[in-house]
Length: 138
Image (cartoon, rainbow, N blue to C red; front, top):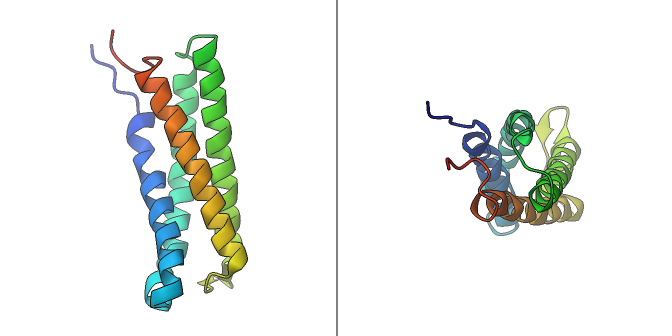
């Protein structure tokens, strides 16, 4: 019987949403509201899907062997929790009575730091799969 973990499939949604939200906010510097108005929706969907992906990842954690792979798993989890916290904060601070606000310097800083954490966490997740063989059939 083939096992298909949910975590690798679910992570694409927050990665895409948060990356596009960051791009929309920075594009808003040149294109104005036409670009940044999509950011809040993308951030919200990204945060909800990130929680779902994290729950699926916790289920998969039981299959990670102790040692270097588990250390990388904890680092991956930490980086992704930081990304969720930064993007969640960006979402909350960027709303006024549930209406999105134009990104300011703080919003762009949260976007940039959240994206950096997302990249680090994604790299660590890929390391778990490609270096440690987590989730691969043997």
